[in-house]
Amino acid sequence: MGFTFSASSGSGCITGICGIANTIIYLINSVLVPLIFAIAFIVFLWGVYKAYILSHGEAAEVSEGHKLILWGIIGFVVMVSLWGMVNVVANTFNLTGIGAPTPPVSYPY
Image (cartoon, rainbow, N blue to C red; front, side, top):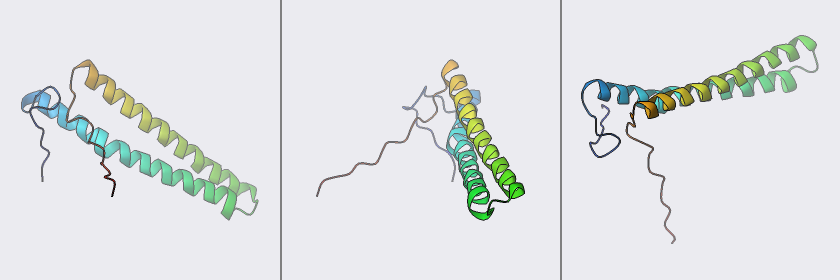
């Protein structure tokens, strides 16, 4: 299973350095950023659970939970920053890739 880009989407670049750049942008936007977001969200939730539910008011465990919450927030910031930088570079060099997927359509019964 490989990545395919249609010539009608984006700048129409399929081969060469432009195609490689489009593939890298696709992988970052579709795989790496959601993965970082998911990990950051899980770490954040684990920190909240550890600080406020599991700690029973013990200062050391509350502090450890707060550190996990902080790392989760740092993960969110890294994810948004990475996403923004990739899209700035893509728009600067007119590397549009495959674009956003079409949203699902619901039909009335």
